[in-house]
Length: 268
Image 1 (cartoon, rainbow, N blue to C red):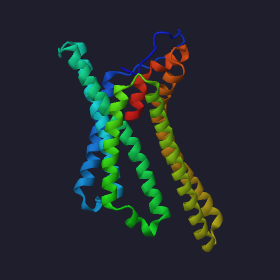
Image 2: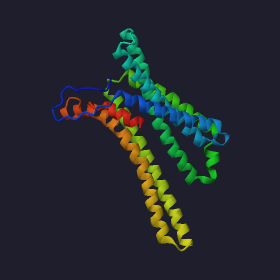
Image 3: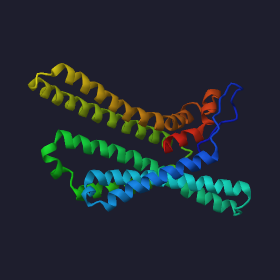
Image 4: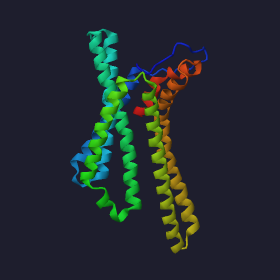
């Protein structure tokens, strides 16, 4: 509700994609079940009690919190609109603020853990022999606690001062920094793996076919990873950017109308 600004100045050409409440609930519940299964699988299997899987488990917990928060918010809105839930406006506002903090904190922590997983994989490739001495469980736990504390702290500030331009600029900058970090690390990892495959191919005298096949597979995988990340998260942060750049422009106002669609993409 805080981010749907200036949507009353659009022209007749504006295309608004209607997102049914049932779709919100369905995607949220599917995401919830998927992430619960990931958390259970990692916690139950002792072979997965390593730093890498700890980061993956925390990523699943972050996404789980996003799903729970959005499903809870949608359910409350539906109950209020149907008259099945009657309460004071002040209480509704406080509950909305709490849910917004959870959603914002979960999104920030989710992006952080995506970045940490990329760093972990980078270290495992470029410092393979020292990986287990660099990425230890105590260090991983400290990093996890730090991310959770920072995410809740900054999300509380973001929701409290949501109408300040600096807050939106910080969020957009954070997203671009995570995107750049992931792109640089994964491209570097792809380059190193390509060089390694090229060396093996030269030894086996099959340089041409192996090099081309690996290059295509690696490029396709990298494109899928970063492409889906950008397509699902990009529209939401584009929305935030346009609030700063052109809050009253008709074209920007048209984009603001599809805010729920951007949330669906994040859940996806």
